[in-house]
Amino acid sequence: MEFPVLEPVSSECRLLRSFGGYCHRPQAEMGEFYEMQNMSGDQFPLLSTRKPRASLTTAEPGIWNPARSRLQALGELDGLCVLSKGILYYHYRSGLFQKADLGLSDAEPKQLIRFGTNLIVLPDKKYINLWDPEDRGSLEATYAPAEPVDLLLRLCSPDGTVCKAEASVTAPLEPANGQLWLDLSGYELGGSSVLWQYDHALERWEEQLPGCLRLDAPGIGAAFRPGDGIFVRGLEGQSALRGIGERPLQVTAVGTDYVVLEFPAGMLELELKALEGLQLQRRMPELDFLFAWENRLWGCRYGLDETGRFVNRIYGSKAGDMKNWFSFSGSDSDSVCLDCSTQGPWTGAICALGQALFFKENCLHRLYGDRPGSFGLRSLDCRGVQQGCHKSLAVVNGLLYYKATEGVVCYDGTLPECISRDLGEVSYHSAAAGALGDRYYISMKDEENTPQLFCYHTRHRLWYREDETAATEFCCVKGVLYYIREGDPLVGILAGTEGTESKVPWFVETGLLEGVDGQQQYLRRISLRLSMETGSSLRCRVQYDSEGIWQDLATLSGRGTGTVTLPLRLRRCDHLRLRLEGEGRVLLHSLLLERSKGGRQEGRSWP
Image 1 (tube, one colour):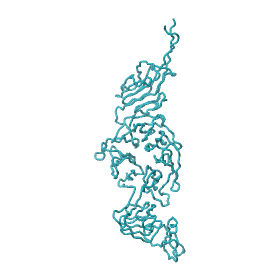
Image 2 (tube, rainbow, N blue to C red):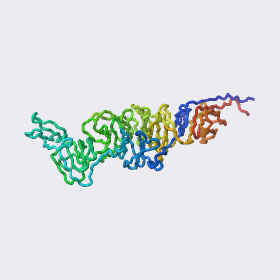
Image 3 (cartoon, rainbow, N blue to C red):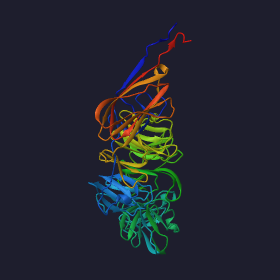
Image 4 (tube, one colour):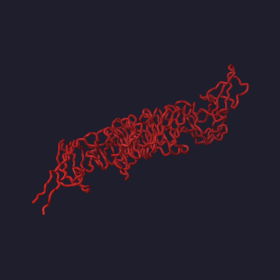
């Protein structure tokens, strides 16, 4: 009689002391996790649960009641700034805000842009100087009287002094000493007029400052300043003023009841009685995105502009002057206007890596130059910002991160590189992001419009999934990352300070753990070294051969730091998954897995 011969059972022990992050791919390696919730890499190479979050729930009574707020935007200027229901709350300190009513609409969304000590609100085109709150109002200015007005127009010097000059194409014959002549020869050729004065001693005409036009009417100059570039409407019907509404005119002097404009044509004197439809306007263009760079505000627009014309354009404000976008006097401080040749809407814009960057879905444009005459655009065909993901732009440790159509990318000034392959084949959209330290937080919606909040640790290049928080905006202020969540009236604190959230639910799930050498296997032992705070809990579960049923192995409660070996019932399988889940703070130091393959039978079987 022959008896079966059993080979010794071989086993494999894997001790993990370094844990990877989220890897939602079939080829997730040992130590990486196919599914995850509320985990963090703050204790890398150990695996830990994320820190509790908090919310801003304290504020001075009568100033802001968070429970009745509707959050619209966050900003930073020497403290947290919150826009809620059209009211701006700023200089957040010790749980208190100051309040400012700028006459904003309560429609969403809004953008808060910092420029020096000013905070600008788009699309309302309003501003406030937070160090001088009385300095507030609109970036635009308009004079448009409701009743007909009497308007006097006269030729003058730039300071507003009225002068008499003969306007003609050729110089006057036998001029007197000091006589003024407005030369219209250049204007007839499409240029500007030139004011000359005759010097009898030199027997020649000396060029003077350009001719200016003084407009006198009650209250006409109250809203404007010298240096403004304004548009004049309502005078197009006067033959002497042809073309006056086609381009912006520069303000050289103002008074309450007069405005002096540089004017390319001239006249001796013109008085209009009971004039209707007069309008003087300092405009700000309609902008899709806005940011500050090199002492200017920069914005872009794809679509109809403020006059109803289609544009594909980049705008820069006058240097040091956020109110003037159409000031063209020939100086280095002039406003900037650049047309773009690439098609498609702008999808984002930011100042990063020392550059002004403007994005479309399939390209980015880098601004170069240092003065109006030298500014230009360099285009790069690459992964741009995905439509609807402009809030995903954030700088971490000198690198720019954002959501592109193919995934999340990192841009270092050369070519954007995709860093989100570990997020799997899921297509995400509607992304918003924030940065704190070396961490990049991004909230996106998946194909089923379910929000997902991820954290990317740039130092270790690892992803961690937190939860299904639908964050619409982030703002980092003095080492604290604030955020707005869909449907939540409270400003949330995501990271940077200890929160009051208790017993945060969490779990991690491994990828497929296949048998040794591809053979059938037994799971023989699991040992965990853990640190668990009092009140926390942990449950270990296993799923065999993707059967969809999780079997409980053990349940643990908070017990400090120690090693636990879990009791197991042997079961033969092709592959398995492990799942750790629980509540409260848990730190996983190491994980020991011992697996073995079953022996083979050789020889004859029993008859």
